[in-house]
Image 1: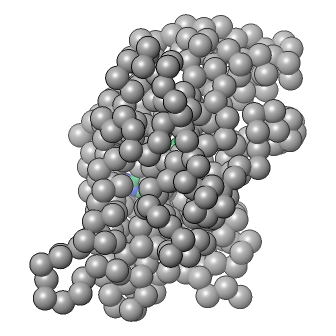
Image 2: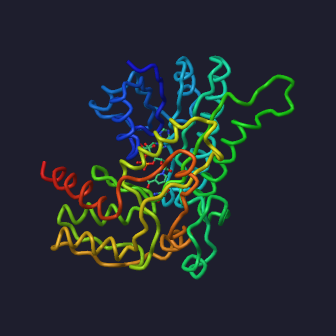
Length: 337
Ligand code: NAD
Ligand code: SER
């Protein structure tokens, strides 16, 4: 029996499902929060499921009764949805995160144990000024290209700073010690690809959409150019990264925000791989200018050497292994049901 009590916000999302299953297998006590109700199966893995809004004070009060060790704060409005309603994105992404940072601080202070807050940041936190710079740039390090283009990217970048503030600088003029009760750790994820879920509201969605449509024998019009290139990662590696960073001793960490990456195919490379597995797939390219501009502002490659060095990060799935060992067998089984 683990004595680890964790909160997962956004537990009903793509990452949430696999993280919930993995933490449940590790015998964690799980409090799940989402706007939408979890399936019966996922509910059965939790101590409590709170169906509600991360911006709602009542939701926060419900969680505060637990002596939480870790918060995996996944709930967010992603990049494309955020551009459709920037004010809503700001409210949920920033105010919602503030609520959980303050909650972590109060629980940490009450229990005397710092609450770890694991935060999925994103390649959208980067803003590469133009395509020619993108095409000639080295893999982006964490402090490169710090002017993101989207509301989502701006929210994530600001949240990274808020997390660092609550961990290391909170109320620095107070006569009592107030920092050290929150241990914020963030990963800048690339686009994620799951065999089991089709994302909504992101801009990296063209890759999973291409694959899942082919598996269902549906034609797919890709909304970015064939040469569009950003980093991607298989979903099991994303959960591995979250749990790896959570497990790292604080003394090993030289920064609170880490890049992690796996492979950087162009949209054409993905289409070729998909058609090699599903020869009847009908994939066309119909770029949408606004979404293309978002992808063009994200680096083609990121440098995750600091994560590799500090907490021994490495992905298990290369581009080929993501398809051959993870996506194709699971997707075929999934749609055969
Ligand atoms: P998702 O959209 O599948 O899941 C997000 C979940 O959050 C949803 O279940 C949604 O109902 C919930 N949610 C949204 N607003 C909420 C609110 N106000 N209160 C409570 N719940 C709310 O997204 P995901 O792919 O699982 O992403 C999880 C996190 O990882 C997000 O923070 C996202 O920014 C980050 N991330 C994802 C990717 C990716 O490619 N999927 C890449 C980088 C970072
Ligand atoms: N996959 C995410 C998005 O496209 C990146 O964080 O919004």
